[in-house]
Image 1 (cartoon, rainbow, N blue to C red):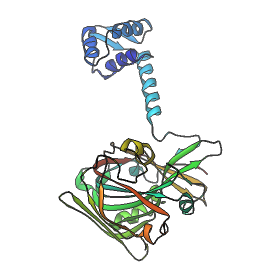
Image 2: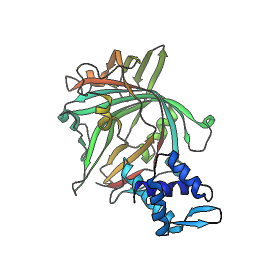
Image 3: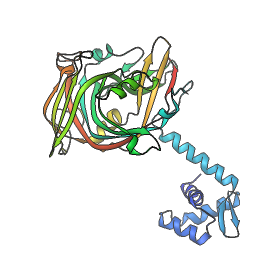
Image 4: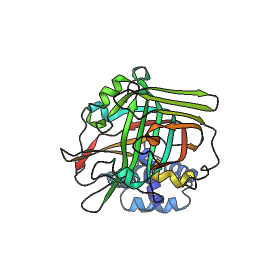
Length: 340
């Protein structure tokens, strides 16, 4: 199907009723389709995908089926987390499939990590995903606002802080195909209820949420972050002061050349992967979100215990860059799983 034919079908599909031919052509011209629209219109008429009714042109059943088929193909092509053979939905609760929230004052602290060191922290069969010859861990901290099922008012939402250590990983199937995603090495939240829910639902079972005193405070252009975990999850103390004024590009020493350079490896990553070795399942939790309009920013002070004296201390990881995002809406798809 030509782009012009798709535009004609789309315009008629979007119309609330039949469209006079002159009005249809006017809309297509305004959309920049051009003179080819007349040829596409004639072709669609000849093949029975458009019919003439008393008040104007409309899609036939054949035309509607053709439009929906192309639309579905476009959705599949753009899906950042396509289905695979044997991948099935397994939500533990119906409402968890439509939860929404908004990240506020999100910070991504990006570390380049020795691949072998990260590999020792991952459950089999997950492996570090290498970019620029190294493995990567992002420390993601933000304020989550009004977490609630879709359709409920913000009044019923829950607000809390969360920090997660997300490793870039891949899962290699027996047929040679690969699913890329993020694996959460550790996570903390300051909300006891969210921690209890997160550690009991299958959707978040691979997070193993810890409890922590947390703070996010803005003072002008400066953003201060603090995390002090409880005694059950030691090693995750974090303190940072960030100058949120955007930098023109990556900081000196970064392995990335631009925001676009790191977008696909570290930003366009929509799957959180979890492994249940006893049951033999790989879990896939996929997010849908607005575009991440993050910018490189400058850390004024930065201390992360995990990368100083913790599992990735002793020179096993190096700070590469810090990103800041003012806000971004998030929602989750139904949990999926496939056999290891």
